[in-house]
Image (cartoon, rainbow, N blue to C red):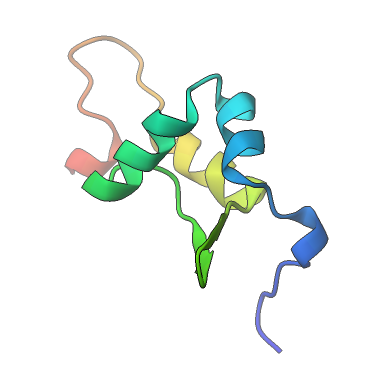
Length: 73
C-alpha cells in the first residue's frame, strides 16, 4: 500500500483555516486559483492532510522581499 493518510488525521476546511490563521473563504479562493495547500476531495467533502500543508508552507519561506523562493528556479 502507498502512503495512505488515516482519515482521522485529516482536517476539515474550518480546522485547516484556523491552523493557518486564514478564513475558510481564503482557503476556498486558493483552491479555485490552484494556489493553496494540497487537499483531498471525496464527493463534496474537502479535507487537508496537515503534513502536506506543512510541506506546502515550507515552499513559501523567503529570506527577504526580493527572494523569489525555491519554485522560481
